[in-house]
Structures are given as structure tokens and as C-alpha cells.
Image 1 (spheres, rainbow, N blue to C red):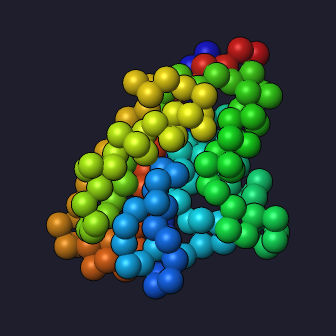
Image 2 (image 1 turned 180 degrees about the vertical axis):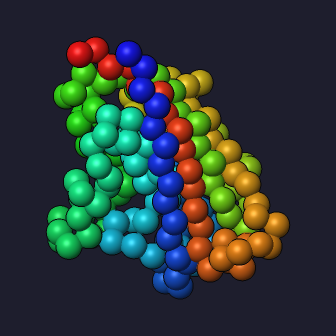
Length: 159
């Protein structure tokens, strides 16, 4: 059986934090605020994977009240999500993800983001699509108050 999951994540921008997207540290004067490294791209993919198998959300598995996850790499969390999915008979087929950001320009970094996500997910790079879209100045992302990401995954399940 094939299952599809959708994930979304949003974090505010904050001074004094690194900007990490898809495991890539992006040059920026502000980063995303959160308990972990606040990587919205990795979080959206993880949410989609959990959703495909109705396993809840990242907060259920990695609560921000748990000090073990303070500053943790979201790629590390993503590997744990893959383990959960695999333990339940799931096999990830592909990922399609989009980062929503007004700035900085992400196009040159998208291939490296796809590679790092693919490595964390145990997939070939050609099964991971990462895109970036600008909100053209609209809304909180357009005003550069935060960044968001969304992802869709396909998972084959044997059960």
C-alpha cells in the first residue's frame, strides 16, 4: 500500500541564531528560533513522514520540554523519524519539499539541501526535490518575520 503524508513547519527569525535549512547552514544575519536547530525544511519532511503513517507530530516524539533535544540537529531527528517509519513496515519512496522565504536567495544551496536530506533519509538524491519560493513580500514570511516549509512524502507500507 502507498501512503502519502503532508508536513508543514514555521519558525520566527531571530538574531544570534544560525540559519539552518535542510542541514545546510545558510549565510544570514538571523536564524530560526526554536528548541532544536529550528530547521523548518527538515521539520516539514519529518512531519510529512509521521503523517503518512498517522504517528502524530514531531512535538509528540521530540518535545521541546525535553532538554535532550535543545539545539539538536534536525537531520538527527529526521533519522529517528525514518527509524520509526521503518519499524512500522514503511519504506520512503520520495520527498517533494518547498521552503518559503523572502531572503536570502536559496537557489544555489538547494542541491546541497536535497543531498543532505537524502543522506539522512537513506534515499538517492534524485528522489528528493527541494524548491524555494518567495512570498513576494506578502505576510509574515514576506515581512521576514519568519520562514516556513512544506513537504509531501510517499511511503510504501507492507503490513
